[in-house]
Length: 355
Ligand SMILES: [Zn+2]
View 1 (cartoon, rainbow, N blue to C red):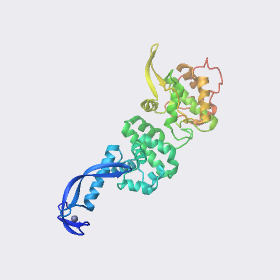
View 2: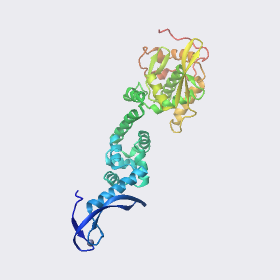
View 3: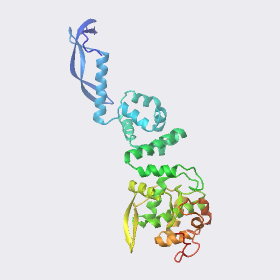
View 4: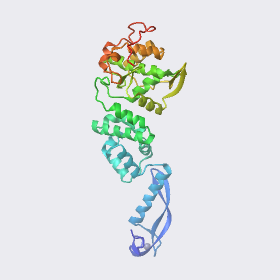
């Protein structure tokens, strides 16, 4: 771009005239607001009128757009492209997700300044949790393939941006399996497992060992009654009874959300951990049948000490017929004794010794 142009066509003089370039303030109207920037303008040396110059005027408009974006925190075209690519979305899928025309997204990426309401949406979507919300509510507008890709990317950026290594590792370990007897014919859903912990632990808290048993009973009981687990978690047969597979990761990922917290607890000679939940489970996490299962488990088993719950779980076929450390098949749910209340809760027989 040559700024040292010596002459140009002056409409006022109707002839080619020598020009001089000066820096002056120019005001533009962008989305109804005035934006003033200092830019270079060509003037006719003969009559003094300003003369249209494609390059100079375009540069001034660009700098007004940049100023408008900067002062109002509006995403630049590069920001929008970067956000879209972060989630593996094409222009068209992004437009579908937002309910905009594809041309709108195209224009914004080519330099048009988004209207304030649109700018706000684009800005927020840079946050993976905002994109996760959007995918939950509007994901049906995408093809299954586009949606799955975006969800994966959201998960990955969550990990990168919040440093939640535990969550990413957990999804990898649990989320990888297809629906089957190991997860109760349900894809793993962390949100559900997390809120099962919140529900059972409550603000009064619960010993970790006891909580692990209640999660197991709830998922297996729901499978027995509705042929599907609640959380899609896999459970392993551990010495103290069933517990979610990778339960350390489960607890760590859950703690990172802030919805539960873990405190060390000493009772007698034993060092244990107590888990506290937030006040309430958010609306819409569980279906009515799931609530039915959770309440049944809480009423029958929710106030029992860890040692009793461990003993009860040791009476279950599910535990007796699974080798220590192995994943318990949900098919064992069909012979569960609890929480249906078969046999006294207060005086459980001790299970077989499998040290
Ligand atoms: Zn002139």
